[in-house]
Image (cartoon, rainbow, N blue to C red; front, top):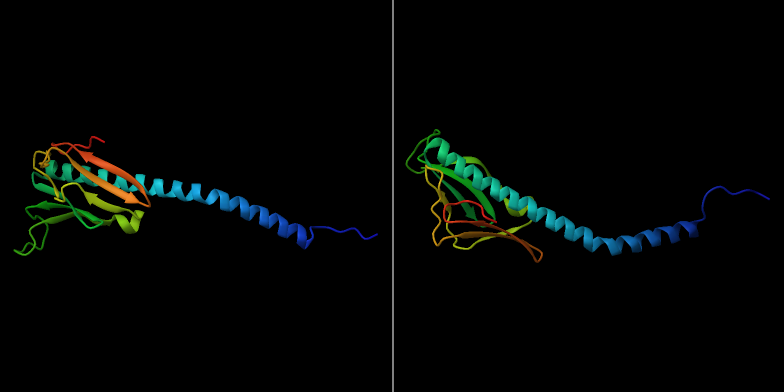
Length: 154
């Protein structure tokens, strides 16, 4: 009698089918974990941008803003100090423009829709007491809440 080494095609097909069924059961949990991780990353990025605006205002004795245009965020400071200085552009961009949708797949919304302004003392002037920045993706949300002085409270 000839001795066989290895597995038959039928045995391999059964093993692949079992692994496929188990993978289908785990996929929703993995996807939800990825979405939650992206939301946490986007929230951390927004908090870092707020910190950058605050530090820029305090260290350079200028007014700094965190502006949202749709799902993009940028920190700017005024008056302009970097060349070229012209009448059309009165603000310096601090860092880079961050597209939160392409980086994390999130949608951004602000409670009041206004840019967040930090004065040269490092204190923000938030109208209405608090500002809430909401980040949403696939039914999950993360929020960043600023108090009336521009500090992150939640």
